[in-house]
Image (cartoon, rainbow, N blue to C red):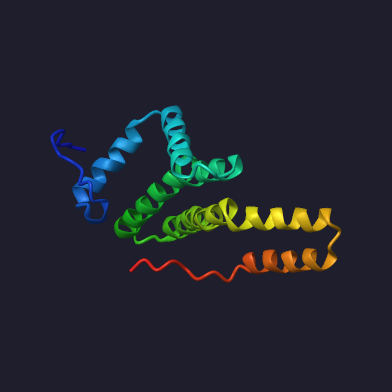
Length: 158
């Protein structure tokens, strides 16, 4: 791939050109795996300082350990479909990519809850248990149940 070393990436990432996107992808694949994983963990910790270790590890896995390859294989499947009129590689890789995108999205929904509502609700629960207040325990459990019903709306990307 020919690269223009003097090309600058927009600071506004909403309107990347195809060339800028390819430059960013090239830079990503140029890094060593160890370096990428270290940088990813550092970046996620900076972005989500209150996220648990488990969430950080999940983010790193679904984006950088396996997600990047799933995205690349999906794109390769698109080219194979055009060249060979065979969509089997694309179909399998679509599900693989969706698995990682879905888990990324779930982490995005869980992180704010884990750092705010859920933590304060658990504190309320601990307090109710310590006071042996069954009514308060049931009320807090109902609140937790509402938080995890799984009926969150999909984000609006428009």
